[in-house]
Length: 297
Image 1 (cartoon, rainbow, N blue to C red):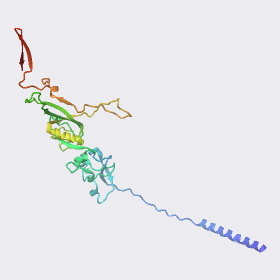
Image 2 (image 1 turned 135 degrees about the vertical axis):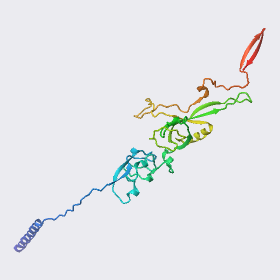
Image 3 (image 1 turned 90 degrees about the vertical axis):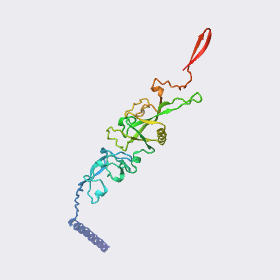
Image 4 (image 1 turned 180 degrees about the vertical axis):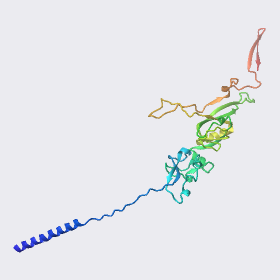
């Protein structure tokens, strides 16, 4: 029994000595930590490229405020990929139309824009579901050159109408009338210009309008009926407080598709169909108790 107790005490002494030795050895070692210092150098942006200043949805007519120059990391092929400052001017892209939407800060490339005269230019200007039709204009019908792209107009048709005569074999004198065939349509181009920033008045020969498919048919047949005139609408609209709800402003309805006869424009035209060679005045003449009727033109 004593021998076993001595062996147990001896084992405990050996275990304690081992633990003490390990602790002292670990405490005397100095941990070595290698810290790698990474030097971050700023990317050199010695080149500036053309980017979108704001979001440009498809169909946007690009103006100067839509574009800006922004610093960009230099690359060997950067001039082939982007529009670089001092290589191509910003003015080359003013008046173009966005073919595919460009987000703010995104580089502007030729593939995203379409220039006047290029295939698909006018199609990019139109709103979805709309059609473009062109009508001839002059100094009078084009409002002396003061209609610009982006304005809204009414289209008025003036033509002569021949009415049937009540007397068989006789021809009625033609009457003239004007009627509004389209209202509140957008002008997308005057001649070949779609730039709504150039406000210099000039006599144009062709006005291109954005209309519905039905409106395109109306214009096509109206050009065969008579003369077409543009009536410019005001930019400002009259608010309708009774219909304005939830903070949304409603506008009072303006006159729609009305018409005017020649007799409404001239007091000398009665509006009646004249009868050629037919007496229109009847006078009773009484002589010696005998009454007779006399007919006068």
